[in-house]
Image (cartoon, rainbow, N blue to C red):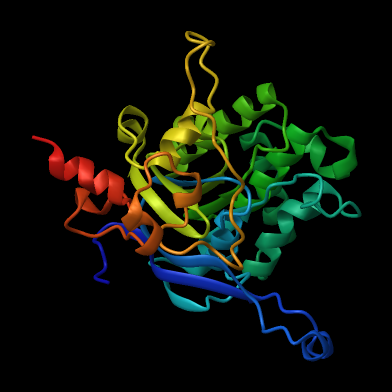
Length: 324
């Protein structure tokens, strides 16, 4: 893969497999083979500096595994991750603000930890001043630094998590469902804060979510994942105006529409297949209303010559070929 001039992250043919086999003795007695879960299966995307790319899909599709691969919490089983920047300036905002903060530490110490780890020679007075500044940047007060996490609401805790992430002066943030544990009204406040910080600090986001209505507000580009693979990737406006993959259309149908609450919507049939034993051919074909024989035997890819690599779908390719 050639380096794009303005790219901050390039992911190419990324894979992550997990051995989910039963213990050796059980396998010997029951004569069962090893079992491998393909959590991430040949994923590729590029994020430009200052951009937000969102990964969306149902639970279990591999979104959070990609977040952990990008941040180094998991090692890839295959493919490559290229971060074009200072690795110390890559931080993560976790999904659950109740679990991601140490309950025994005061907030000031929590936010100061990245500073003390990355810049151990920083004087205590400078660290304390920076902690006070970060608390105010995320909408809290300097006095909150002396409190414990349990004294805050969920939205306030996520603001503390954001302040902790900003302490290392990141240029790239991996945001793993950062608002899914919050009430809807609080979600909007946190998302608006993240947008403001991105504009003011020139941040780049990899934003993980299952909620298309959230990423519509946040993302410049949306990548739709299904069973470990990206099936469609488009600029946000284009994806909402003209979704190409049947799975994307079904996801969009789940978004409530106040202007047309009784509109006809296609129900998403069936369960997500197991990533341990995925279907042959296109993994979405058992649930796809447009599937035909080729879908059941051949695996589609986002090829360069088809719709500018935006979609992995034989039905979409056929429609594009038939279009005038």
